[in-house]
Length: 133
Image (cartoon, rainbow, N blue to C red; front, top):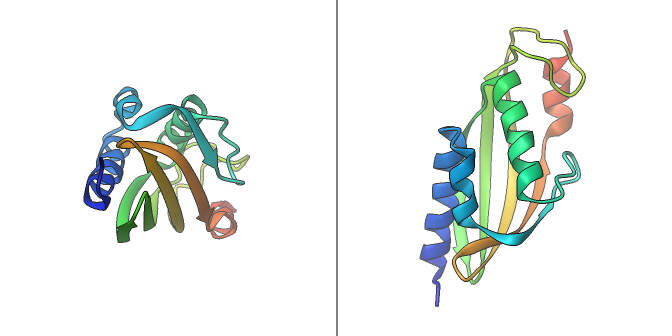
């Protein structure tokens, strides 16, 4: 049986892999039927999520830093800041060369030590305002 501390370790590991751009290693952290509830990106599963992350890394050089992280039961909640420099096309905006940052609150549900679901409430409007030339 996994504990809230085990679940915290999984989510911290996910952030390490994303920041290092080790997308293929993310598979070990997710259930095969993972569901992403993110209205901004509409990822249908882990493969789509990886594509979104690759695009964000390519266009923004994105990195993730924790503001808060805590776990209770089978859930982990994170409040993060994502930041980078807009050097490639993203969300229909041509590169501006500007530094950008935005925040997100994300809830992960884990089962058997793997991520089963994620809900996201990100400041996409704030990001889009920064991407405008």
